Image 1 (spheres, helix red, strand yellow):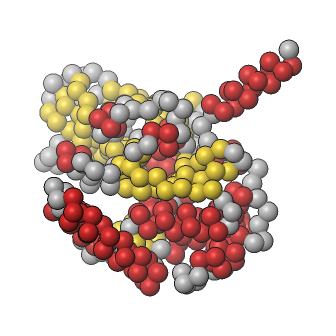
Image 2 (tube, one colour):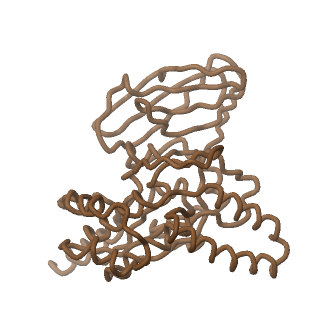
Length: 336
């Protein structure tokens, strides 16, 4: 009987999504301070850098944390490099030989820019994180897939456009995105502002899946509960700050909603921490103007947040959900 209970416990434990809460007993203060102490280190000898970041730490998760935090706070996102690569790939998409030649050339440019200037795109972030982790004896892989932000042209998203990582800790795989955790690129000036977002470190797979879709389904870490690419592209838009506040995004499931005038639409989230009703609001736009609106009803039960709203007039609206000053999610709503 005891053996049956043990087998059942192991089965259900294996079904639990791998996420940061698995390490609630770990204090990352030492790992973070080491990453800060080696700020500005060069990338000319990665084994040395990996050793400096990890040699005095006791657990694999702390070692990975120090590496991850260093990458996210020392490597800038080069948006001009991204747009150049995207432009060339679109130009050569129907010519496999030219596309292959460009990819080979671009890899060299990407590597040189990373090493010399500490600037890169998602591929470089994922590569550097993997290399430093592997030098520390950690099993870390690059995941290729589709990433979705507010500016993504989903109508023309024909090829994978993003890279991130999985790392194996205590025999479980965990997700992280060093690119989106590092800060904010200005798409007009190509200036980059470092602003570390801890929410992308060992992220919950269910939240991560809203704006990450891997080419290989197994790297969703959702134990078979995977959407198709078509379904993924229908998801709402969630922003980096959503990872700061949310454990789960429950409803609405899709970006585009159609409701009737005076019909209530419900928004439901599981929060990391308690919040106050007064901190939650909407910004609504109709193409001509935008305004701040409070939910028709706000219900907070422990860490479950449920919002309701209805529109008094027909039209087409963008509805943005905010917690305090942080933009969480966006939906488009057609009111008939």
